[in-house]
Length: 253
Image 1 (cartoon, one colour):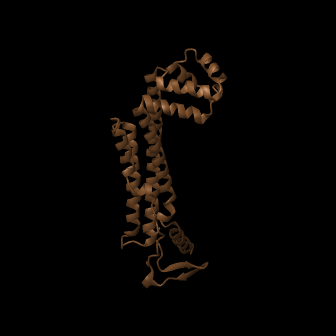
Image 2: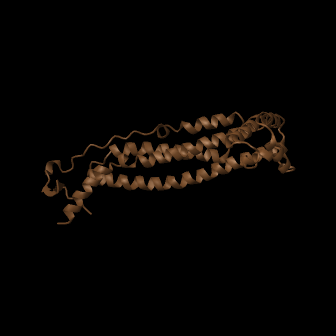
Image 3: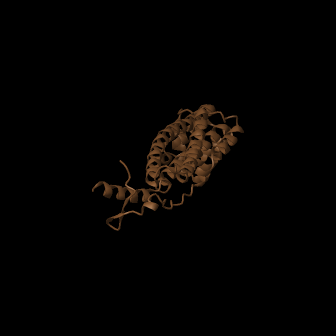
């Protein structure tokens, strides 16, 4: 379909365009990239933290870091493309191609982000499982242990659980951390806190993997959402829509 530069749609009427300005470019909306899309160094800082425990070679984490860098590269590429228009084509054709390519890029990134999310969640699950193995978690006497803990007053319960954390007692910790909080008289927050304390003391490397994986999950998920949110401004949607109305009006003659 050819774009009729000799005609334009103005205020509901089809009028003759000024042929000397037929391909005058309209001002594109400004695009401000989020901090996450301005730098690929976010993932590098995570790898630096994991390097302290020689855990920076984890495949899922490195893949997620690469996924984030690709999101950043795409954002920067389209910022450049939108303002570098081929002089042999109209702005309408330029924006139409930009819109198509951007949509395709989003589809490709959606696949890679979902894949990275699944891998990171698996990495977190594996880290927690390895922590339980390290402390010898088991359900031996779990019901009795939970019953006793539930019957303690808050101060005594706290003292017992702090000792269990210090000693890395897999029996008590398993009974408390692998059960619903209400069975031991704890809140969700308290249960999470005791698990965090135990991991920090006995498995700081696995705790680092869990925490950094969680950070990466947020980074890639939010970065992709930022890229989606930037689409209309990046591709000049409002301008493209105006051109499309002119095209439709011209082709209806």
